[in-house]
Amino acid sequence: MMKFTKSRWLAGISTILVVYVLPPSRAHATNRPRYGGTLRVELRAASVSLDPREWKSGSLAESDDSKLAALVFDSLVTLDDFGRFQPALASEWTHDSAWKSWQFKLRPGTRFSDGTPLTAADVATALESLLPPGFQVNANEAGINIRATRSLPDLLEQLASGRYFIFRALPGGKLLGTGPFYVGESIPATPSEGNPAVLHAARMKFHANEQSWAGRPFVDTVEVTLGEPPLRQLLDLQMGKADLVEVAPDLVRKARQDNLHVWSSAPNTLLALRFDEAQAAGADERLREAVALALDRDTMANVLLQRQAEPASALLPQWLSGYAFLFESSLNLERAKQIRAELPANEASAAEPLRLRVDAVGDLMKLLGERVAVNVRQANLTVQLVSHAAATAGAGVPSSSNTPPVGLHLFAWHYDSLSPSAELGALVKQLHLQETPETLPGFNEIEQRYTEEGQLLLARRVLPLVVMPEYVGLSANLRNWMPARWGEWRLADVWLEQAENPPAGPDAVSPRNSAGVQMPGVRP
Image (cartoon, rainbow, N blue to C red; front, side, top):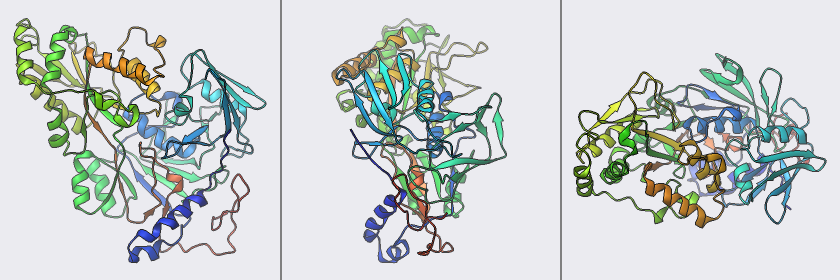
């Protein structure tokens, strides 16, 4: 059994404790947290979806969606930076000896942002729409029960990450949450057809939720501007027009040279190649081996990506699997040329080159695709870069009927789950690496995962290239930035240093958190 009560006030105390390590000139200005103000965030994405049911596993779009959804929704449990599970909407949990049946007791008194109470039926309905097939979720007097036909020792890792937010769907498609903020206006607001939770807006606003069980967030509003290109974001940060921006890997060095504060996560995005048997060359195991041996991953990571990425030889990163360092992927151009000489002359030749398509958007991905093409051509294989009119941020996109078949795809995969078993299973399923993905084993044992991943790498249907962290630029007045190492933002805990916003006096009215603890200085 576990019990826990979280308060934004505690987050403020943590800031006070660390303030003494700052230079004296700044320590005086940050001697206590402040409430109020607008946190200005800029993203490259032109649109976002706050409906977890619509997200696509592994896509870069899901990464942006989940960061904003975390403002509005909560999960049953969370994971702290020390790998310890902390209660959120669930206050306690137990499981049977086989790890197949889990019982979660819900936190009492939790309310949605409109003031209506959260019920076990709400939780069960939300999770039923998000969990994969084979899970049963039932509401009962004590809370909810999650049952599966196989052992689920990693269920808490799954529920603490990815899409597993709790919400209530209202008539018309709007989703309510219990999180620290609620969705305000979108400027201009253009909901997608059939799903109002998918928003196409130049700017979105999230307002502080006074009903939040964890206590009121520090800032009054989070204003998110969408569709901002990387250079514009960096300029806005320098000019004081933004407090938090994304920093493209090729701009990290410039940002740091300009004395901007740049934070980086653990490597959470894989850039890799996927062979497609739609083109005959993609089905040839010897050709796949030649391509694998021709790839110069060190140059990609250290030169093209300016040391802002790491060469990858595994599907899962080291911090998630624990065994990625055991896999190797070495450059051997001479062996690649030898294999090419043994292939039929008309395979990947001028008559029908190996077609390479970039399935993820962005100039950086195009440059990486060009580097891959250069490497493969050095092995005497003919490669043709083809355009993708409807480029997406995911993987496994079929070729259009109006284009010739493609044998090789460059894609990006964002790690969404803190469960290595769930992440490997999602990647295998999404990329169609096995015939019957719905019957995939659980990969619950590390030896089983290691063996399975080794077999997938040996088949060379997917060739890892590099893994990249995400980079965030922070303004000088943003305080208490304490994100998770794996990339989860915690914007409810940040506050802004603003001279025009004086500290609240002792007579300020303060709401109470879910445990009834008075929170000093919080506005009514």
